[in-house]
Length: 171
Image 1 (cartoon, rainbow, N blue to C red):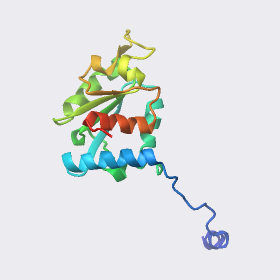
Image 2 (image 1 turned 90 degrees about the vertical axis):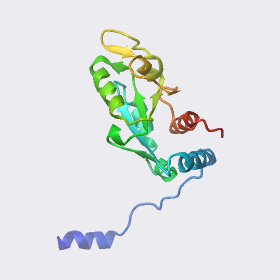
Image 3 (image 1 turned 120 degrees about the vertical axis):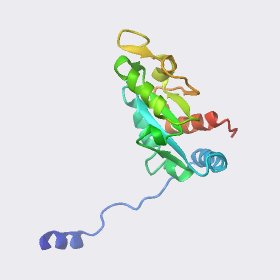
């Protein structure tokens, strides 16, 4: 164990210093989101992401919202593990028949008032999968949808713009 500590002390810090690139559009969107959330939601809004059968492309972009570059939590947007704590459901993918019941239960478990956002082209219209024996198609075929964020997959900035659009906020 002492050998490891000696090596750590001899090597020192080998990582680079983090410098945050300044993205004006990101900052402006974040400020607008934060302002609205402070006024209407007492400082924070909770989002539950639901994968209803996607290819995970949209999930990668949603997860990017939490990385150090976008860091959407600094604007009062939090992702939660339970639909019982959520204000917004972000649903991705065409709803597979196997996920139909789970999506309905998640929707019912989310307290009112709630918003549902269909994220990506597959969630919006069923994408290339459409409606078939294995797919219900668009999210709106299963639960009511309040907003759609198009794209395959939508970028994190598009996700933030869609959230602002849902709130009815003009930039």
